[in-house]
Amino acid sequence: MNIRSLLQIKRRLPFYLAALLLAGGALAAAWWKTQYAWRDGYGDEDMSYFTQADPRALSGGDMTVFHTGFQPFAQSPNNLPWQYEAIFEDGDGIFDKNFIPGDGTTASQVSNVGGTRRRGLGPLFNASGCAECHFRDGRVERPYASGDEMLGMFLRLSVPDGKGGWKPPEGYHHQLHDRAIAGVPPEGKGHIDWEEIPGQFPDGETYTLRQPNFRVTDLAHGPLPADTIIEARTSPPAHGGGLLEAIADSTLLGFAEEQRNDPDEVSGKPNYLTDPGSGKRVLGRFSLKANEPSLRAQAAGASFNDMGVTSPIYRHEGCLPHQKECAAAKHGGTPEEPELSAKQLEDLTIYLQLLAVPARRNLDDPMVLRGEELFQQSRCNVCHVDTVKTGDTHPIKRLRNQTIHPYTDLLLHDMGPGLSGRPDGEATAQEWRTPPLWGIGLTERSNHHTNFLHDQRARGFQEAILWHDGEAAAAKKRFMDLSREERAMLIRFLESL
Ligand code: HEC
Ligand code: HEC
Image (cartoon, rainbow, N blue to C red; front, side, top):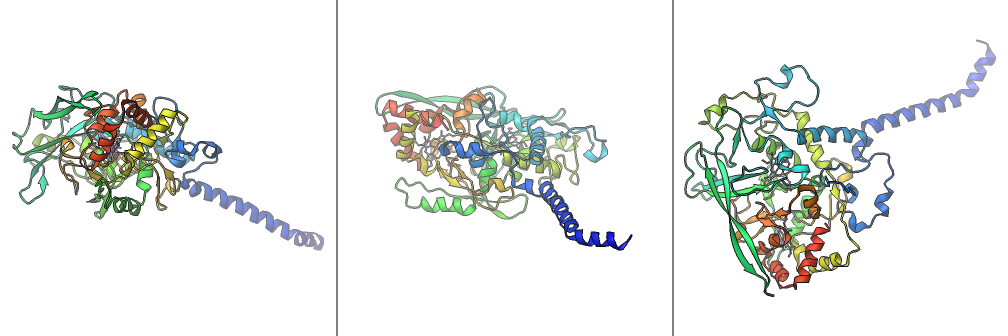
């Protein structure tokens, strides 16, 4: 190499350096993007339809979907990065497909046959897959009729423990398992007999409500004590869970504070429980009595209690000491290598966190708008809080700082003796969590029925409201005092959610 070319290189050095830096920068950016940037939950697509949309329609903030098909509760949000889309698909696969009984093998003992392993159903269970109960991620497909097998519904049982608390009846789980794998006796069969109760509005219009009466037959482990309290719980829809998880504890406690000295004596209360994952005392927010603290705990609890599938949170099969056939049955895992792997539990959790919320509809219908005013004037929104802002700590950034319209305070309310069930954590028998109402107007489209409340007793919106009592008695009375047309408008509003 001669002096001239050396000088040339020297002259061009800044250019080479700049090119090197640029290439390095581009590489670093690409690396950042594949490793980290997608974790905020946003892909590269245009999001202008959000800024152009009527803000009142955005029930789930950036997690709202404008889906017009038949699965409004089963959608991932638009513009999800492909990495999350892939996890969502994996989680969807676990949610949608049924599990099969174990054959004594664990995942690592069998060569990978492709797809997700779904072994380990039972020995005792209520259904073989999440979607068997949460049809299209919503409620049950077919509501319960007297004498039917219970699908998407189960009985929970409690007896007094003699120390002021409660325990499961001797010989049984707190959740009656009405199904089991071959060779194992189910614990019993639950039945509901409906009893019609007539009623009348002040304007003379009549209605009937139906009150459930419970029976348990085919009991495998002896009769239930006479003081057993029985309650039926039916599957609520699963959409929007990530946003509910992202609401700060302080926001929920703030609602309880605001409700102190409420003129209607509404007094929401948080349910505190021990997180089965961390062992810490935490605020409950999922399930009908806010008896689960997080979607991970909910997913593991559902797998274990409803399907008999073990996971990193519940590693041991739930056979009671005297349930010999249950203990002797073949499993799909071991305590060290549970039936649902850590990865599967994570995929399922992220799936639940990313389930989007359907947009509100019919916002230019004057009946809907008048119905909304009547909802507020009746003070339904003290519990069914219309606007909430999520906190800023959720691991998925897209769920943070979202303005959402969930129509819930996620707190427990005493709903009176008519809706009494069994106690759960710090929730008394009569206390239930305010259920979110977002998307409720699409129940019929998704699930082919409009049966509501914790045990499906309400055949439509009006019956659901008429069962309200206790802390909600004043709001119910205001609804009853409306004219027939106004009541219809309030229901039109609920249908727009
Ligand atoms: C046998 C029917 C059944 C099966 C199977 C089932 N669920 Fe549920 N699910 C319910 C019922 C009933 C509740 C309310 C439980 C309660 O109040 O304790 C519920 C509650 C939930 C909630 C809470 C929703 C809310 O509003 O807080 C989520 C999320 C959920 N289930 C997800 C799942 C997942 C994931 C699976 C599968 C691993 C699953 N469920 C399997 C019936 C079922
Ligand atoms: C004191 C709090 C409170 C007030 C006020 C209240 N609700 Fe509720 N609402 C609840 C609770 C708690 C439940 C669940 C009860 C159950 O499942 O047994 C519920 C259930 C519902 C449901 C059924 C939801 C479902 O997913 O099954 C509808 C619809 C509803 N409320 C509408 C209304 C309307 C309309 C008003 C005003 C007239 C109102 N609520 C006032 C707490 C309240």
